Image (cartoon, rainbow over all chains, first blue to last red; front, side, top):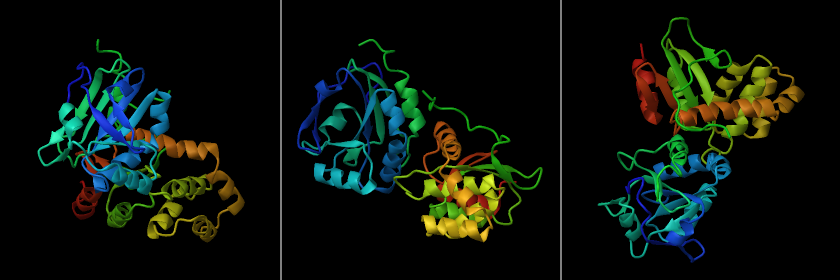
Length: 155
Length: 168
């Protein structure tokens, strides 16, 4: 996954409402992109449920979390509603995996690696993490560690 | 802001729920009462010579009744019956609605009014949340997670390792 200290690349993701989410949406606030392999897969289910349980604590720190996968927006919405989580989903469906490739976390199997990127208000990657395997679930503690790095890298 | 960054799993403290023979190997468990693998682990631990420290790790989006069940166990604890409620909860994890919690409290002879007030009490909620947060900081991501002298065991691995071989 893209290294800390790197400016975020240009990218376009599709929001649930059909709008776009681009690099410009990163500016002026702290963003956490949670790249996950597949909607409805067991580990991803645990992951988003766990992060949702501490979502208020992320919000208190001024951080907004987004789930990113190559699933279509309707599939992502169904997944989010099924889980009952509040974390907005962003789709990297078409062209498939382009944003994951830009963030250097596209798995050769055709899906996102399980990766995290904390991006500061300056749109620079403040911290990133890629799980050793897509089946490993990174703890929420790692994201809180990552948030502490916001502002420590010059843009 | 409460610190939720990485930290080692807290060692057993006097505020923990702890049972088992003195000198037995210590296992710190993070679990929830609505989790099938936790119930399986609970059953697998029966008769094992272990010093068990139990901490709550309810994730509401995965197990919506895990949080009320954890608070029910804590409320029973206010009347000195934590482990009895704990065992009754794991004995029937599919029945965790309020009437089921009241039935267990009645079966234990608890003061029901007090039980019902206690399980909604801010300090009970806070102790459940404190357990959860200590687990988050230690990197717990799923239930059950067990910390032993040999490291961290998760999910069915915890059931297999602790249930069949013990940690001694």
